[in-house]
Image (cartoon, rainbow, N blue to C red; front, side, top):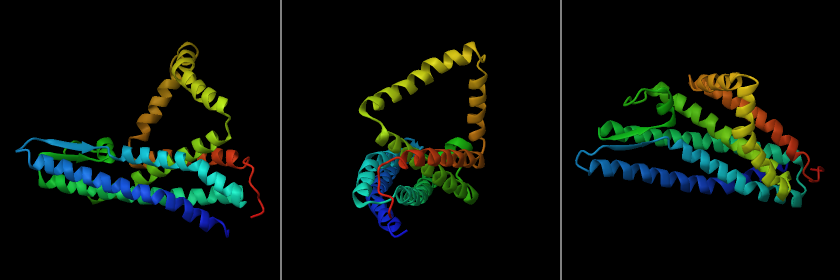
Length: 247
């Protein structure tokens, strides 16, 4: 436990600076969009789904820093369990922070939307679960927060899994595995599903996708299942890294 806190702080320090800069830029973008609409003599405009940018940022942060974190842990003799727990705590914290910041961006965008009719702002939640041109209410913002935290945390954990897998693979396998996945998804699976299963697998996958976006609770359930599955697989890769387990 003595090494969990320092490693947690190290991971958070690496991530928070980028997150802070990112949200400054996103805030500036919303302000610019608002003032362009306000000064354009009635011309309408807007923005939405900016949470996608958050997900891309989180993916990039984890993938770019994973090898550095692991190498530092190896040099300091930190155990696999400590690396796993410290990373998990840091990612949960980052998920909560970015989810809260996404909520604040949504509040800012909706505030501007309510004060100038030519400007519209639709968060990922609004685009998925609400009608067009409807300002969210208090209960909606609670759902926005929960959805953003769940989705952002899931993105971090998935990137954690990809980083762990990528760390274990040789240069050859780093090329073969992504290529194999691409061929399977876009060539083998459609052929097998069509010829053998009469498209039943695709139909069930479509039903699951539609169910996922029926309500926020469904989305959170899928996010939770994704997180637990990705964490289990990630630990299988991390536990095979050559790190001294004395600490």
